[in-house]
Image (cartoon, rainbow, N blue to C red):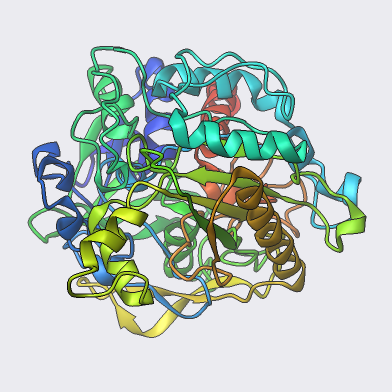
Length: 535
């Protein structure tokens, strides 16, 4: 209705949007969230079926360009060596993520001070520490306290068993004298908040039908809705509207019936990820903001960071039961996380030890490589490889560079005619040197653990653009940032950004828990300033 004004309008129901909705719900304001996808039905997840690997390549493909669901929008990533990975639904990309949940380090917030590159954040690790803990409780995080690589913290649930595979790789790290630790994981190992524990089935990245993986459609949204937040699905936002006083008035969106609507709001919060957020901001053009809303700095869409990925796979003589357990969560090593100038690059990376390939993938990759032939020897060669492989991934810190950016495509659009995002990105020399170093260390670790065959991966891995960061960066200087130190736009005083696009640096770990901690911190800052929010 024309006169229907909500207090808070959130765009996006993924990791950050869910966290902000939950936090602000205690204010009893009228809060509405618009999500362009729908609720997922866990009964349809590929993990319910014996041929789940076939379904995984279709309905749960990680790239929207391959998946092409109604809720998806196309992404032109032809000018990037790394393809963009995301998912549009209630829960966002947490539906398909691995739930690997390591925190940023304190050093990640002080990169300019410590290493003379990039910029410092206007906040630090210890500002976020209570929000990390709050998010651990809300999501249901499993882990082991005492990791010497980061400030100590106590996850609410016991860590995921590392199994024979983790023990084998751990012995390799011990032999080399390198750090390793069981991964913090947003996967519950005991019954928690009415949810059943992980059954170690393996296909986490197709959606968890058990509900043990903490996607925010089950960890946050049911609670937020009980607290009064309204969630409207199948609503695609076209643009944020603004008045002559540089204040957002709401958003224009297509509803589930395809009717163009305008929802007015006192506060607009954008939570669309590091590609979707700059896309929306850049498309929200007006006489007041001809280059996109909140973009007087010219930095919206710039400084895109993607975490270039490398690694190696190892084959072992003994069965390791390596296809059991959560796909992306076993152990990690942060031996090479902090800067050591003798390595020839600045900053560092995380080594993430992940499970071996499931049966169909083992056969397909084996046939493709020639290691598993068709014919009489097929099953014998398959048995030599299945359940005996281990992957070590190199998650390399990506430094912010303005030429790495998201722009609007001149030709490609979604089904509503909104320009698709176009990715202009190249991997820096620093990242390439980091990946070379990390790949060699991965090979060394597999050798030390007893691998009989090792295959380094070409880097950067193409289908690895999971982490979308930096395109609406946080800072105190309006000329050098898009939002201030608590997420409010410098240009539009009732517009906030809460997702990974506000990141100043990328760290060297999976960012979801840090994205959510930042979102909870911004929501808390808003609550503390309700009387003076627009001053």
